[in-house]
Image (cartoon, rainbow, N blue to C red):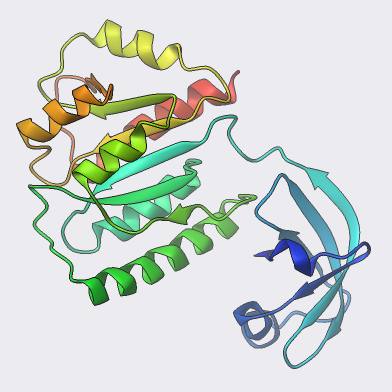
Length: 246
């Protein structure tokens, strides 16, 4: 069943008014018809089962059939601080991170990031990445569209992490797998979680030192060196498993 996202002010007592690019998508791409059922969310903890009642040039009017309470989102908000990788890897990372339940992705310009974006390229990339997040959210039946934040420097990212409950940074020189397991199993539902993932080549030693000063905890993901697109998904998969069971 097709899923769409709207703003809260588009939801009325018995109706939802779908506007914007989704109108063309519903009419001309999906070729939905009056009477067809769809699902609609407004970036919150409810999903609305609806029936298309009217199709106009710039608006779809859908009748609310019933409301389903949140059951698709994790109990904790997870923030992925991702060092910008080469090529189109970031698109794959965002898609899979959204599927695994991430709340927000923060691209980070690190010392070892090969790709350097100017202001215009950053804006274009963010728009592209946000569209990928929305598509992945619809596919995986999320009730929110995870935000792709503007690109931050590592210093800015570390400062932002100060407001989170738990922050982890997988680091190849970190030791103690039992310690890592204990830290991750100790995360409680409702806590906000930050994950710092380096680009190709990992983090610079000074960045790791700064992270520790901000109480971002180094952890190990085992004896093997993981690619940047693998490391974040590994941590997210472990957290999803642990949080879904609590």
